[in-house]
Image 1 (cartoon, rainbow, N blue to C red):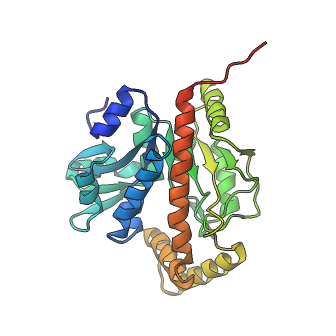
Image 2: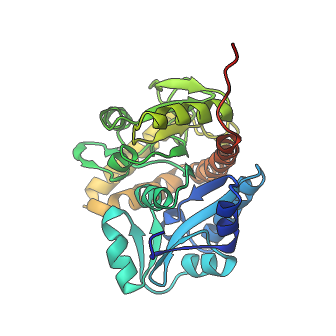
Length: 308
């Protein structure tokens, strides 16, 4: 095992006893939500995984190590404001570890860390993608999904992005896009996008079987399991689209660009929607964690046996 990795006691025991484990990211803790809401959400996600019979492995960088599973004290340290904190993607690991900064893992970074220690299931909110109007601004999440064999449960890509272009890049990267109990690619805040998925799946066992057969062929790519947000908190597609367009126009007017665009848009969309986008975001994160827990349990049951 690489020396830069350390396990929480709970995750270490789960690995020894072959219990189902779900990886969880921490960029939402360090950069996505204000304190103390960020810590409350992190605990909720871990509880959602445990409720399904799986073990949560929240991944973050602290004190020059990559922690797979965080103790209560470590989670508090990561999520409490103060000291250098970086949003970690592939390019950032060495820098954050060498400087012993706090680091919250993005989808890309969580994929790298989870795969390095043999985890197979990962739950997040929404993946990154291709930015609207910027076809060369492509999230590092997409190529990482194309080379990392994990089941990734999400609510699609963040709807501030160019969803058709994002799906095209996922296809190019060889990523299988599955709709969990839906035939349509979710719109993150909304349950629909008008875009089809590669195939529909309805049970955790079906996802597990597809993953086994896929990776048995030596295909080093993720299975993206896209689950729509719960109906009671989902925002209608037409409503959220108008809000996103307004937020984007304001970003252009204010000269906001680069890495600052996404945080600005997410914050402004929440303000313009009266908090409904944030409520949807929190609910879909919990929903995805629960689904991932079910899939992780199905993954350790073993493949189906065929009878003559």
